[in-house]
Length: 263
Image (cartoon, rainbow, N blue to C red; front, side, top):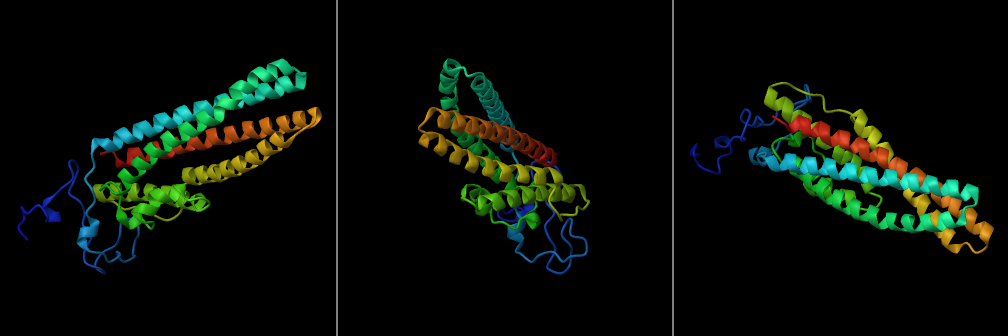
């Protein structure tokens, strides 16, 4: 093929760093991080990834900023619920009524924050996933499932952790490839595992919180309403605390991957 032909992958190099390391023919090499294991057989075109651009860094910074804002919002919700429990213990009905107006605003603000953060985060994840800064050998999920799996009910509890793990390993392997070294791609990174546990606890807390809210709506007598309100605020405070911790762990993951892809 003409070495200057635009469709020849060997004539194109990333904007910075050494040229891409294209795989040898099947059975003649090993994958980065897979010492002694044959390199998977796939066409040379599959090894070509989209060149990196500053857009990835911008999306990463926006993701971190939105996650930080979402964490702050959840911490405010924790404070409001703890304040409500204090007023409830004192029997301050007027204070509870005034506080309830603020608490009623929190779900809508939280949903708006989740949507905005989710859109930017998934855009960043896909940008890294399909770029030349993430080695395809580390990807077991398809491009579509790595992103769309986050919004599939129940399945997202598993697919999200797999996507983050493979994104981490892909970025690490691509960095090792460009530096001429190798990496072990086995296992889930500890920080990703911690985030995954938090993600599952967050889903559980949200389910329990919805049940507590339904019980509060069905309460009739004063004592029953006060008891249901105490339960609901306790669970809500706990759920917001877990969500804050999970968001902080995701920030660590994003920053670590951003450091890997930076050249």
